[in-house]
Length: 359
Image (tube, rainbow, N blue to C red; front, side, top):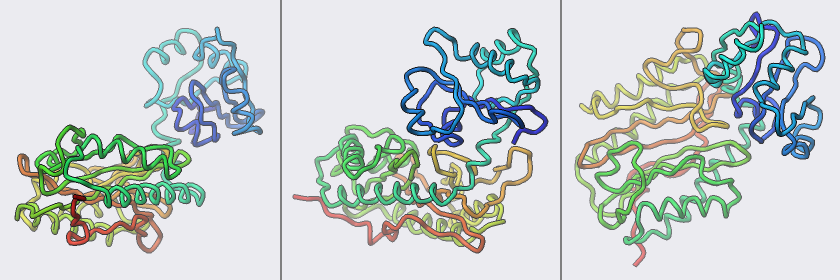
């Protein structure tokens, strides 16, 4: 991870959490190649008790409220005798980089996703948390599905999802839910609005739950009355594309091959131009993590990315017709050496997703 550097300065808060278990903010982690302390967390007095609870064995230095965190980091890096420092290029701001250059003689080496690459492979405890996040999201969805009525708006349904997830023990939604009825479902990232579900024959719901920091990400389309033939056809094609992609997944297979398996199904149906986003992405502490499933997904060092056992990814092909609507079906999948395990279990078939509004 350190390449030719003496240490890495971890400034991405999610990466700090991953490496230490600390859930606070405004803190940096210094990880050295050799010597004492090996890892040092720079934080502030607000978190002293939290640090003792969450990572009691981690060396830490608590700055005064008046101390600037960047200056504090420069001072400690100097005290540790670090001359070559690996930085997180995706997290360190230009202003922070300039300050290091101006106030120290430390040589800064550009880092490119070193911690993120570690995060790609989930351990047993991470998988347990993701399973729980999926289970919580599914329970919330099934609960609301049984209570749908024609006069509930997209926005109200999104709020109810958040409320139900919290009631079930989740920390909340893993991202702002997408609830899009009828033609608005053609917007892959539609904002929930005032449209009433009863105004259209189908609604797309893209949501997830967070449990102990780990996230899930699911999408289903509920059919409330007769849908246009073009949308019905798109549903069949999207489901077939998703299943083709999942069937192709196993350790050692390139993400491009998996993406191609889905796109070929959609292209054969004459809908290639209607699938206008990536096939999926990793999930974990962030809702979008590496690897990305797509035709141009490459690793930090350049080669085409391959799936590895322990990765958890979404598979979410979609077909969209502006002015009419869109279909996306999304599930969370754990990669094994010899195949893929679909962690989510909500019904996928069209007939299984027909619902009736409460009177």
